[in-house]
Image (cartoon, rainbow, N blue to C red; front, side, top):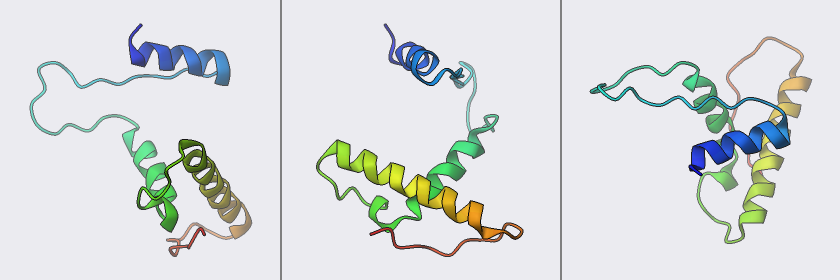
Length: 95
């Protein structure tokens, strides 16, 4: 089974959602905007605002996953409690 198909099956069975794999067209040369890719890039940028995730410090993958989850929860909580219009966020230390 192909890795992309296995991941799509896992998201369907476990998360009960549909994963859409967007591939580059076979004849494409150079840069082309891929739809909704900015959402993923933005989410990764929010996570790397946590200093501990900026480098690969952790040796244990489980600890790394826990820190990613913690950074995501902290970011969501920050946005929920902001209360005002969206503004550029300051960098936070996530130690």
